[in-house]
Length: 106
Image 1 (cartoon, rainbow, N blue to C red):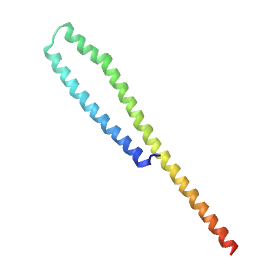
Image 2: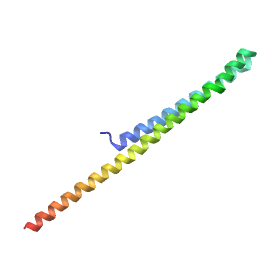
Image 3: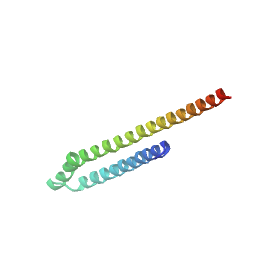
Image 4: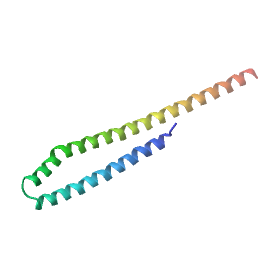
């Protein structure tokens, strides 16, 4: 079973990688803008239009999916932390009860 800190670390790594993907997309957008400045005509317009309509939508959907994964992992880490804490409390209560029973027998 993974620890809450390991799960949180994975969520952080995903967030960092998403940042890298966004930076790369910005670089590609700048590159596309550069191409559009010299590639005139219908072919150049088709390339930029395709990016703006189809590719950009797919990238946005990817960002949403990655963010949902990160959020899910953060939620899982919190749930595992709560479950670990609950188990710890139950073990302490059991130990206390056993000690009280032993003391009552003395």
